[in-house]
Length: 174
Image 1 (cartoon, rainbow, N blue to C red):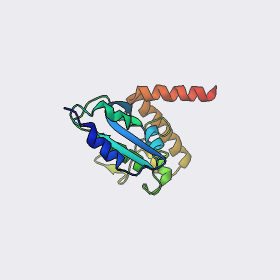
Image 2 (tube, helix red, strand yellow; image 1 turned 90 degrees about the vertical axis):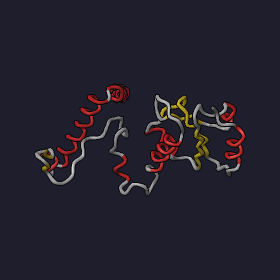
Image 3 (cartoon, one colour; image 1 turned 60 degrees about the vertical axis):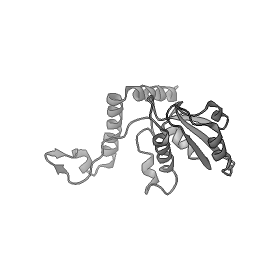
């Protein structure tokens, strides 16, 4: 079962087209979402998203589309969940969305690594303690600990990202 092209064309063509516009089809065949994509899409004035259902959309709809995007290597019954994911990823990067914009630069994927462990009060909960270095007040030691944690987590949890990060470090040296 496919969505017919007529209502999709009518819907997209009914919208005023802003100069920097991207018409996105959410589909398993598209480019997989990532942080870099969210950053790029944040520079557009208008994002139009087409969400398929069941088997998808009539292939003629691709004449309207400027980009095909996928949530990952799996199939869902509809495109709304990937569309919400894409919107959330883009909107949170827009100025004013997150309280401290500086904090966005320290998150997972910004430097090619996963985020470091996060802790809050109390310093001990059910015998689980916040690492001493974080309680030390030594900002240089804390920064070093966080960087090491990012590297360790990425190496252990995401070997693909770890290798890409190592390759990037090597290319920056040369």
